[in-house]
Image 1 (cartoon, rainbow, N blue to C red):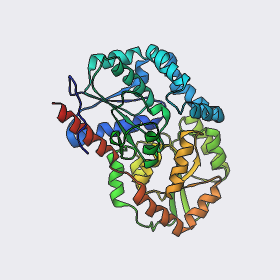
Image 2: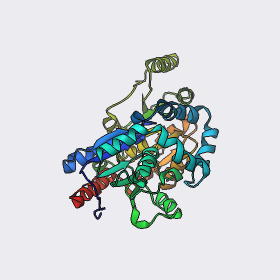
Image 3: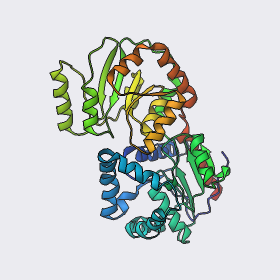
Length: 375
């Protein structure tokens, strides 16, 4: 990738995200990791929600989750309504609400004067674009899209380059007038540890029983328990449950399983996902862009049991179209999939083509070249 020139007063790189869900933060950390490991560049991570008003922080961290889980159709309505950067609501928010509620972040950007801002969330992109448009900062602004389809909120006037996960996302941006030269199709940036798994996987698994990993994070607990209630011991698979946030919820789940005579490990937050995926033959999870990318990079086929109505609906469609995932409604479908070795093997072969294990490294390389060109 050629250098993207960065006229700047410093060589500082800020990687911005919003802690509304884990995907944006994980993608940001992966970029920071690649810049450090591959180019000895120490980029700073900035959660824009730590530098805005309490009202906006609450809205993004808590109300967003409440809406997608409790009122999914309302969320889908607004997701579709806002899929146009020129609508009155988007323009009003960007002109009046965001500047008022993100003053701390604006001061941070003006004081830091970074050469480059790499944003993994549309809020930090929008505010950074406004500061640049006002002439208060002159660096480069890059948008990293962390779902498999782009959205109107990803578009802002002063974005210099887009990094997207799919041709569909690129085509969608092109329809809004973004030039091909301003878009790179890289995939979603994931930790290098998943790349190491990528190099060793994609062979047909010989494990019997097959190891199945169920991840509950991001889904309503009611949906998690409803799905796991259907589990019946089967000699063809071994189940591990992880990503269950809160000791009370883990205890409730363990009690439910014990009532069925099942002794299944139930884990909370996990820091060893690459290690778990290295022993996994099928991952059951929701259709988040980051977690599904990590699984694909690790060579693990996907069974999607839940998705947010909005961006994850499009993620699910993309994954099914590429042949790397199946949408499941009940646990018997998992058993059927595990028993169908040919189907699982076809999904593994599809992963070879679809996975993008070098996304973080590609973006980090572009950033390093950009900083070098600005010196």
